[in-house]
Length: 131
Image 1: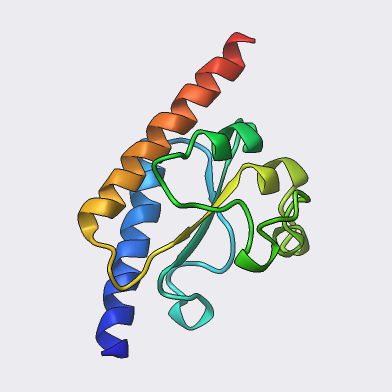
Image 2 (image 1 turned 120 degrees about the vertical axis):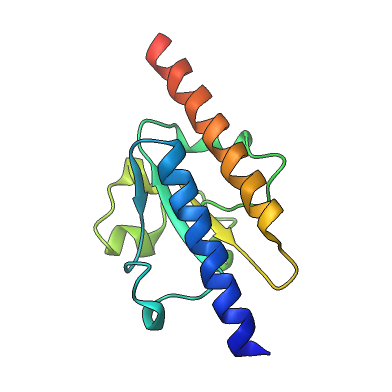
């Protein structure tokens, strides 16, 4: 079932990314292009959201299980060394989210994630522009 699942996960991951880009400005894809499936894990997406405080972003994601770094460094408050090595600025590294999609996720959950992240990023950006 791995081939079928990988194809579905790639489609959901791409839907998530394009949905975020349609809903928000200044969304940066971290890592290789989505069109390079051999270089990406099917259910993994990492994006940065310019103009957002990373800590506020993470604290606002209570309804989603997301991370700001890799699973192996989730307890380390430092910006991701992987994103830094890719040339991502510290500000964007701190304003990044890692999404993990799995076998039991469905399109409705992906759409919920798009809506939740878009609303949260938009609210945080508005708050930042007021201060």
